[in-house]
Length: 410
Image 1 (cartoon, rainbow, N blue to C red):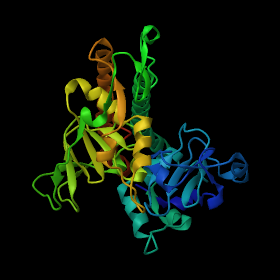
Image 2 (spheres, rainbow, N blue to C red):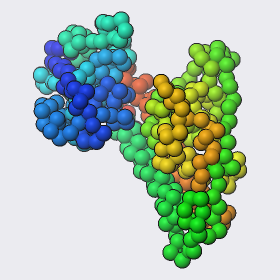
Image 3 (cartoon, helix red, strand yellow):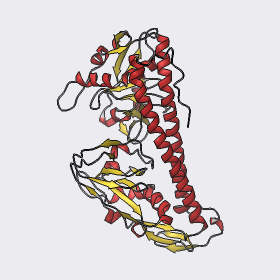
Image 4 (cartoon, rainbow, N blue to C red):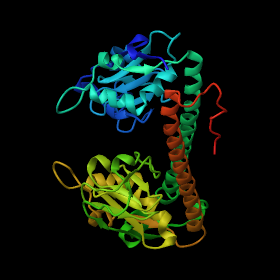
């Protein structure tokens, strides 16, 4: 298969050099290096600028279809702009421009950039001791396969089908997530549950609550579980969940790794337990474990004491109010940490065990079940896509004589 340099058909331009004074808490989101991840843009923890600042950087506004690449730190991470809305591009994130669309398809370039060998080439050409960097010119010098345009489009179409299904599943997870959070908030924070209009409300330490409900501390129906796994564990492969694998405010895991040797002490967890990041940058990291595994020691592993309060425990720990309490009560100057001894005293109002509790539990458990099924579906789609990618790009699989490889939606 013919090869050519990226620069023969495309060019790379870095984003806008925003100043520290430009950052705001709300406004127009700015895509930084950390927001470019596994082919997608994640706006988790992104920075914002005002409309006036955005106007000065208007030529760096992103459009659907734009292909991005990180040029510092995690070199070679790529993403494609989809339907994330209005965004701007920060410096040290490059954007590709196709200069010769008759020889290079943009979607094909996107998948070439995701090939592990090309990513390794970027890393090999990086410079800088403390933090690796790569320049646009060095990116443009690297070679990619360049089959005829119809073959490029066929390959890109096959791989895009997997990404489209992944994105659709991720949207469904977010919808389920919002439904679960909203139901918990409406019923157990604002007390707007079915039939609340006819209820009598009484005074409590939390203010007025429905008559017959109890104010309980989290520690009365959930507990922290610390199962230490020592450094150097090599007995068998372990599924490892780091805080980086847990999406912002999502009960569904985003990813995980398989490891045999541990470089530091870890904790083990069981399926169904809640993983809560206890250091300040990660208080919003809350997920329900879909399997048995190990996690960072900077995680609080939480288990419900009884089956009938499980949904309440998960709803409570993932609520905005609980996350805010974790942030407010954290101790430590350099790296504030939340303490279970403090968090277990967080108070909530729970209904008596009856129809309302059963309805909530059934809904919440069904939502979790659907989410976790989608998580495994996404992992399977990623695995299949990543196995196909190098074979398609190398010509090992002949797409001209190949039956349809496009996956069907599960």
